[in-house]
Image (cartoon, rainbow, N blue to C red; front, side, top):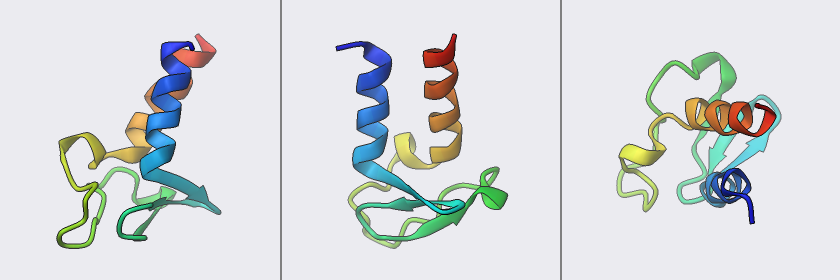
Length: 69
């Protein structure tokens, strides 16, 4: 499997797109695309709250850019 597809699948196991927001699958907190420049507001104790998941919009953008070339 392509590494970028794996990265997208990993992102999608932590976040889902719902309308104009990403939603954490651990704490169900949303973040609007309008707030994409801010750190993600995980709920206290969320299992996905770590350095890798604090900027989901940036991560998604990077993965999609890599896939598109």
